[in-house]
Figure 1 (cartoon, one colour):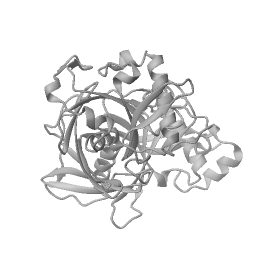
Figure 2: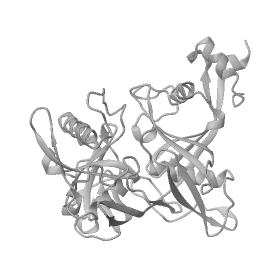
Figure 3: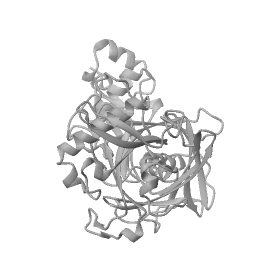
Length: 399
């Protein structure tokens, strides 16, 4: 039996983008048949398995992220980027969300791999995000003709400092539903089957996110992961609210088998006024240094920091009069300082009302990224049937 039939090897890059980490895979190196492609990817990650011990996944939603890249399909872009959330519990890759943190990783990757010509002091990488069908512009610092890898910019949730990569999201409102406010309401009432009612604000900006007041769900608002992730009652309640909000906003269908692992959207977060608290590194966060406190749920668990897309959605909500975050935020401006479990995230958003909708003309956030490893991921051929193997064998990208 030839070595080809024993296993396949796929060029793989591991990059940390912001507070997330994942793999960057080129579509040319994967099967063109989507079902087979996803089987290969799941095997690379080691999913489904809670630890992903037999793959490259990190055993958490933040370290089980995927960026599929290819040459740009549009003249106004330099590279195409498809985000996938690789499930840990199921044989599922959810392509219905997007990830701003991994967009920073893709921007760095594109600059390193020659998808753009390096210019000083900043190289702008135009990323076409196929999930949202929007352009994201990543600004990569360059000096002396080389990408800068040393810098003084720090993001909470990541040790050390690096050069700042600015991410610019243009026209991010209504990326998935067509409207920044999917239900056209600044506040909606969610009614659960047991008769409980909760007030939520649903905002679609980069990703659709459901915001609920912390006190309404019995939360203090400053919980840390080791505390909240043990609170099954609160997590289950938030999941029920998320599902009902997804249904009324048209993102989810009533009667579907909906789980956090199989449906990444909408996301959900609870918010409260600025509060003093100690973060995951036992650093003291003073309420005077933040505008709003929030906790963001990702795939059924508390995000250790705060997702880029969630931060932009929250910054958008803060600037729309009457929303739950708008009534809580301590100060209004283009920059919103969000207190999260690891510290503070700074997010810019420019929002204007146009008719009955709200236009998010620009949203921006500073991130960092670092290539951690590149090489080959090996996939055993036994994950395919003989017919499937013959189909993949014809793919020129495998060698």
